[in-house]
Length: 230
Length: 223
Image 1 (spheres, one colour):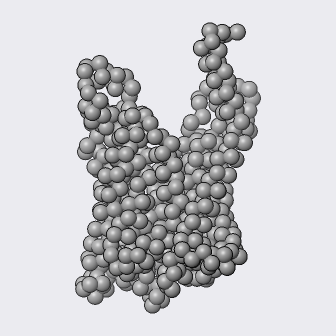
Image 2 (image 1 turned 90 degrees about the vertical axis):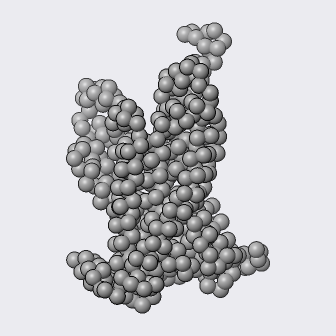
Image 3 (image 1 turned 90 degrees about the horizontal axis):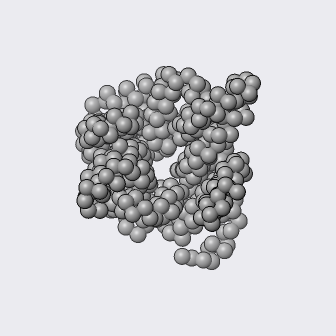
């Protein structure tokens, strides 16, 4: 490891980290915006699910570099050349997550909401989607981590389109392993930080889960102390 | 559509089918990397998953390991390994195995954890030893999930094995790399489409494998 190089290039490392975060997170954000309505539709009309997930699976198998290159014909070399394939990849993770999350909603909860006079849209937005949050967040975590680490392949197209992948291609061509190591450590750190943020967002969005757990623990403690029911 | 026309013109050109840069040669390299990586990941993943699942310990290790492995950028790891061992296949196999490990490990672990607890208790009550319980009850119940993990892993490895071309080791990615370098887009598309077809074929093979080996009783329950 050449630490002097690292110290000299902190600016560049920071800038490429920003690029990497921007390209990867943008793809996940768009992917979520597309997956929510698609997932809701698939949960409601079951026959839609098989064809949609078949297409998403087939697209997921397209090697990312080939996907980028095919798009070059249509988009030229721009941010969207990288973002579109990454977005498509997230669909094969996020659509099933939304569908699974919605099918996890207990039937009695759904019926209670209807009985309380919730119209379908309001029931979806205020009852079903909140209950689906943990499963959707789990999918988002996988999608985010893999998106952020996939951005680096873009560096094979151009220096400004791979985020931290810039250090991989540079370090490999020179060859200068320090640079590759810097890229790897930065990508993993970025991905883990994003993952942690998502875990916290998930907790904030579902305060009832921890409250329920805490209550179960207090009940358990009381049961052990022989004061259950008081 | 242009994509299909390009693919057809490439795949129907006779010279693309022979020689050291022909489709059969690149396909066989690709399959070879995939199988080796998958075998390595399965050996480690299934063993670790069975041990942690059976002992019900190390769940944090399993999830932590698999989360961290997902964050590893394939291209970077491949380049760094290739910098120390250029022109060898070991780096490619290791990178692909790292990619295949998380789904196999997590699914094996979850599968064993979710084995019907009544069946496990009954097996113990019949006097089975821990290893017998593991291999006669827990493993067969976990099998559908293990197959699912293997399928996901194989699928991902097939489409990612294209990176081997970037350290001059061939595989189907070679068409993508060469095509990009010479602006020969039909070749890029050809390599990509063959990769996708191989990935879909892999899905079918693993689905069939699951159907053949999962015990009918368990299949009925999961359905």
